[in-house]
Amino acid sequence: MSDAVIEKVDNDGVVRLTINRPKALNALNSDVLSALEAHLVELEAHPNLRAVLITGAGEKSFVAGADITEMRDKTPEEARAFASQALRTIKRLETLPVPVVALVNGFCLGGGCELALACDWAVASDNAVFGQPEVLLGVIPGFGGTQRLPRRVGPAMAIDLVTTGRKIDAHEALRIGLVNRVMPQAELESYVEELTKQLKGNGPQSVRGAKQAVHDGMDQDLDSALALETSLFAFCFAGQEQKEGMSAFVEKRKPNF
Ligand code: CO8
Image 1 (cartoon, protein in one colour):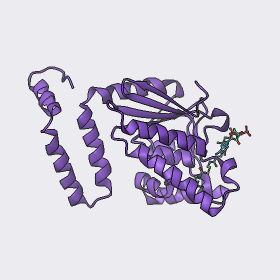
Image 2 (spheres, helix red, strand yellow):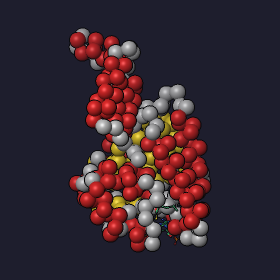
Image 3 (tube, helix red, strand yellow):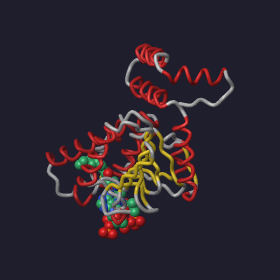
Image 4 (cartoon, protein in one colour):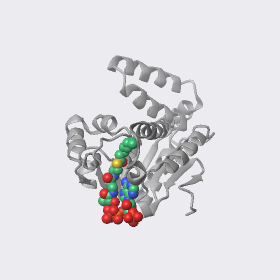
């Protein structure tokens, strides 16, 4: 691991970003957010991007929140600027055109949980701990938690978590739909390898289209969202992937996307 605050490894279009401040449990300060945003701007222009993985360095923490030491003396204006930087960066992650997978390998608190909420997948090790403990620090979530959490787990559970600040384990996170999978830490890497292999085996444009339909449809009324789905579905028939995928089925062979 280099001493960069974000480590980036590009494995043939599967890009892994590792937040690298293990001594501070990978807490998000302005340097980390700036570095993350710079990587995301680059990824937006990546010609062959297939999936993005985001994780924290070490075996103890994904991200233990926004950096409390850095935040402590901020004025309201500075706090607003910090939150805006984080919101913009997290939005860039969320709107990447390919699946984004959070490998949650430990503490996933505050801004860390808000980062994971912007990912399409959250795969957690069984030692992971989740929570929005901001009220214990005299603030509220400021990196999108009050909005993305109720959309993910429903308003009742979101109110529970953001008003008590209580921490939940990985199994409860799975039960409430905050994460997609939980497994022993030793199995996390091989699971994610399988997952990315599966994603890479599918048509790249179809995977992008499926993500776009879900994301863009979520904030629309049902009829508009269904019309969006129809347009994206029809658009598939203008490309080679649909021809290859359906021909492969008819010819009883594997598709070659
Ligand atoms: N910020 C800064 N440093 C941190 C953070 C953090 N969020 N979390 C841990 N660290 C540091 C500790 O200070 C400690 O540093 P040092 O060794 O120099 O003393 C080191 O990481 C290791 O931490 P601990 O010794 O505390 O490790 P433990 O295993 O005993 O405890 C915990 C782990 C339970 C994760 C504990 O560290 C903890 O409670 N951390 C804070 C968790 C938290 O409250 N997160 C939410 C932060 S607020 C937030 O994210 C709101 C975002 C909205 C911002 C709005 C814009 C202004």
